[in-house]
Image (cartoon, rainbow, N blue to C red; front, side, top):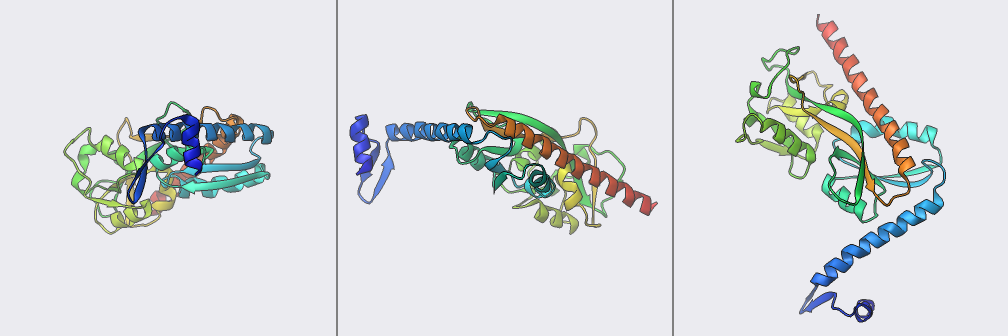
Length: 278
């Protein structure tokens, strides 16, 4: 009844009614899209009125799976300590879904690999996350040698399943040397990928921010690429209409420092291992 009343107000059919099913009409799809923007702007207006202090109140953060386990354990305690009035809600899923929910107003900001497409979205680059080549410890490539994409068999490349931006970034890098190369396997998490590498099933590209956690296994060794090293730019995205840009800038500083700590721990651990072997 409410939909029919709205159709009378607008003067157009928003829904196609067929036997046993309904679907949005072409006009209905456009009305729905515009209504999402209106609702998002309404939420932004409420945020503007409620949040005067930096990082206070509720903040809904989206984050991709190849960042969440490596950034949040370090960033969350710092957020709680420095901003006790913040109520953080975290949503972890793939980039496409996060951006859709961001535009719809269901999330306030998203931590992801840039660029983030969308005319209604602003971004802030936070840090560069270089890729390392993870191979079985028994691989003949020397641990201290810089490698090129031609130095390993790309048919043995293990990547995340379709939908993860890390998969696309890795294939784009490897494709510069061999456009016919295909990833032989796909997995749902970096932890699974690294276990497959450790057991000799192949090799993978591992983000440096994940190295401290995922490369503790002595059956894996990490190699750096020759310059220019492949990397992704990690940053925050939010709606242009959001009034909480001070919050996002403050959050970005804490996230960037958490990533820096993770990288420093990885470097320190790697140095200790090399000294022990020596």
